[in-house]
Image (cartoon, rainbow, N blue to C red; front, side):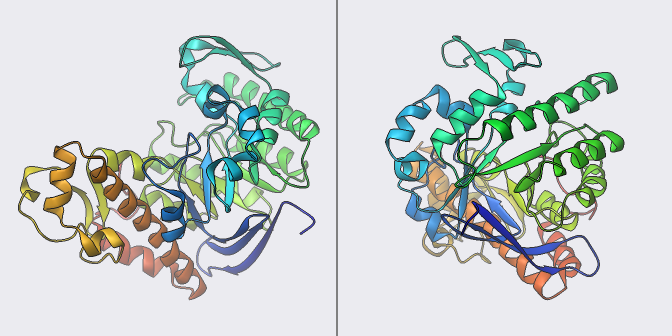
Length: 381
């Protein structure tokens, strides 16, 4: 390969914007649509790298801000980048830290130069600019790196969003200019604009002019109603090039995966499956199950009788509940493994359904079995 990523569009669904594709990176080929497990600290919580391979994860996401704070990009670079540091010979995507800075609202100040904020660990002053973020991401060495953006809150005033969109576009240009490893790392731009159609289109068109290897839709799943998120996707993705991957950031409940794919999205990530697993909640073919609840104390069935993951083949609800109640780490390892496997299996089913031109039928079947009463609403998480 002469470029860091290459996207091949294999099939379009005849009734929706759903697409079946293939994303080739320097560390392996990813079948899309794809869900990417989140490894914030260069680790998907409780999962070993070989287990991620076992469940079919070809790409994971790591967090630029957190890795900059600890252990630092210089140390990671010295270890051979994230791939060497983690012993992970598959694809990695790093976000830009924009969302983390957004979440530190009380500790930050945004200007056109960049963002001044304080570390969540010790309160020490920090500064992120497009140039410094590129330096960090270049040293971390991920296959796909995200441009530094401003992630606005919801709701936000129109005037604020206008400034934010233009700032994010200027930052994308600065990121592209500062990117020191364009032959090894693909820089993706991020479309912002809140719920305003014209701002989303303005942002998308301007980013497309930069001819980046891929594009993300950001600033969603930040508190807006789900129907609004789906509406924004519906009028944003058509402005993104068909021959490049489209990534919806921070979204990953089952209904959001289906709705995003239906609107032309190829890549997703979310902490949801690992986060709820640590609370004793699992996703099953019949909906969510809170295995830590007392009703499962003597339930010797698997988490999901329709699941063929190794957890469901070898352990009962009663045993997993006991582990979680006893604060045994194995309990949340098992629930995490199952949840990630479940979402990756959904994506596998979606890919097959698109190939067979029966995506909407598969979606209806899944929603009915999972327990989504309103096919357009899904769940709130």
